[in-house]
Length: 136
Figure 1 (cartoon, one colour):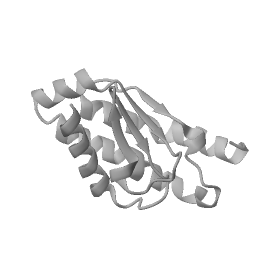
Figure 2 (cartoon, rainbow, N blue to C red):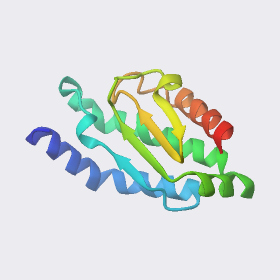
Figure 3 (cartoon, rainbow, N blue to C red):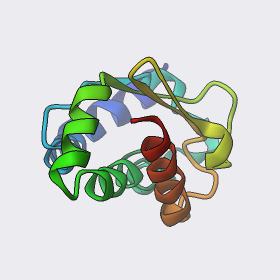
Figure 4 (cartoon, rainbow, N blue to C red):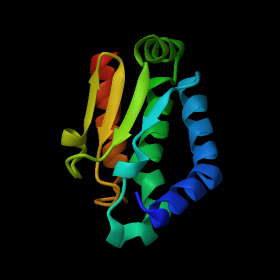
């Protein structure tokens, strides 16, 4: 990452990320470990969109899916017992949630473009809910 990306990442981590992380933990009912490959979440020509797209693509779907899964004690327990980590990356530029998400050995992986279909939060959320319900 260059200086521009490092500055953006630092600002995002300081200004938006703490609140998003708190919402994830609150929805899950426990402190969820996040492994975010920040250096892979960039496509230079779209830098001006990331403050809006990162939350919509990576964080809001997690929060809403966890709210759905953990809406009762059984779901909270299943999530806490099964989820070890969330890994966020962008290695193959997926934009279809059906191909971008996986859950293996307790690791929920998001391998999704940081830009494509940003406003499709509901679709990403429903794919995550289904994935988690089938694997917890």
